[in-house]
Image 1 (tube, rainbow, N blue to C red):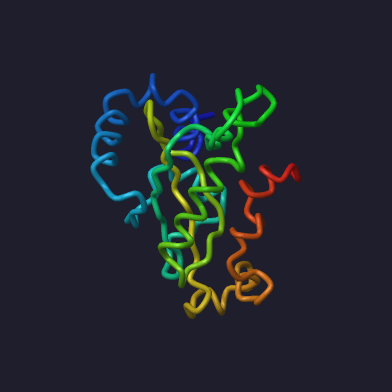
Image 2 (image 1 turned 45 degrees about the horizontal axis):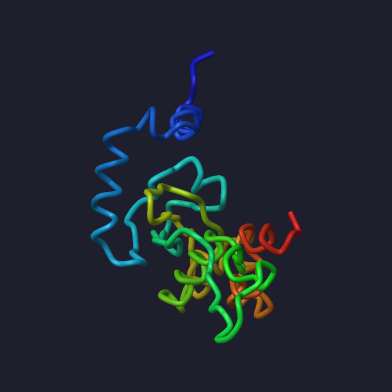
Length: 173
């Protein structure tokens, strides 16, 4: 049986360095020059975007976010030797994907974060694409599958760890 488009895309993104090679390198060079949070016209990974809830209609938006890799290093106490159990180096408060979602929410405060997925990384940064929804758009209000996001309990859900990345960081998935 022949492969469909989404199967082909999924297979391609399983090994992006082998399959996408120069295209991915070129994209990363361009993305490095952009701002940290950028609105993207189309999703880079259509298959993954659709899996996490994106639809190609008004009311949905995609944001590409750059996050620096690595944990948060704490300051050493002013005096003394800084014992190994002081928690100075191996301290990551939450996952990088969750941090990316929060950055997107702060930039686009009128939209609501639905979910996100990885699109690339180099030695310094990771890039994630965030699927966002406008809760006040007529298409969203009239769609019974997504209008749950209008409920006031779901406002700024990313800051409460209610997205997939947030739940994973909280140990709920």
